[in-house]
Image (cartoon, rainbow over all chains, first blue to last red):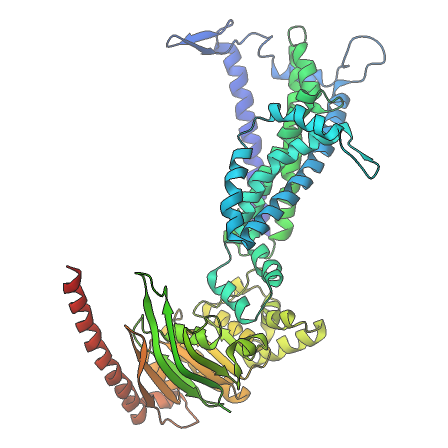
Length: 294
Length: 270
């Protein structure tokens, strides 16, 4: 236990060090980088280092404590970003739940029927090549037409569905690999007990799949956040962090630090989702041999 | 009623294709209740296939397998046998006790009954204080003892073992052989045991079934007369060595055939 604790502390420390390194690099570039951008071997790739393109880190941080807009009754920006992040977090969570249910169900189906795997997997791969921006208006218009048993499609659900769309794929593929990872001898053992398919699934295949499912769910969690943020922007849904990013980006010439407050909010959102999965990982894997935990 | 009755059984994989393998041809074998029978032979002789046919994990191409007077399919459904493999195959996510309870859980036993039986089995394999440990905290020999406890948890009359001690070191292996004999004597379990170790087969068995490959078949059945009470002294006894010699000679005929067959086939391939 002590060893685990020390390892957790070490990893947290390394995370903080890596953030500090990025911050140092940012400020260093501001000192040495060309003010108006520059060319490297004839290609314009060096970003501008002026305060409009790259505001100082302390400006970004202090911006959190200032009001969102000029004028009375304006809330401080940290509160606005926090509320936006919380709004998007709930949408992403709904999307993650939908996406993981579909992903796990598809993986179970593909494990059960070999033909399903051969027939379905190519479509799943193709589905991920469809750009989200193209899909967003379609989902909104389909959802708007949906009225069953007094259920009307709320606008925010479209964003969640798009989050689910990005989340289900890594979860389906990872879970499929995990379900197939059960050793042949263990499957034979379950056969020798005349275990039903369901018993084999829940007592052997799923527990054996967990080390594969955890990283897949982490990918799915960040996918659901990206899906929701992009969907907010492309469907014009108000109240979330995606909307804040696009709004603040428009004001970047006059208030360059502002957009970064929202970007950090979105990053924190992704971390929070991944953190939830890590928590589940720690709980599920606490009794497993240490080699399989990452 | 015999514990296992194999009558005229053949098993052909990929029949009618270029990859056709005659794993077993016309095999007849009867195992009486309480008997310990080993299957021995070079790899590819079909000894594991024969064990899987008895376990109904495979269906014979021709012939019939009867276990405890029932079809092998019915006896699998009734859990009339327990099985142990070379890898202990304990589930990492279950405690030792919960691993032993697995077959009982699948049968729908209630919790108290399961726990009581698990403790009983742990005492049988002499690991009573290990119930709450996780499998990966145990040595290989201990894991294999838990696997045997799991195989016997439902008190099946028959135990099928596929090279269960193959991955253990020699000292642990000999200790486990002694333990297995004690456990089988206490529980009056019939055993069919696949191995490729001649001393192991002779030490454990009442009869050693010698098999040859291509096609897999039984060439000889060696009766071992070591009596009911075998101990570590048995390993130094004259009739232990004469048993080993008998099995080795039966196998050597096999090996000569094997080598010739290989040589001829090699010529054909070119």
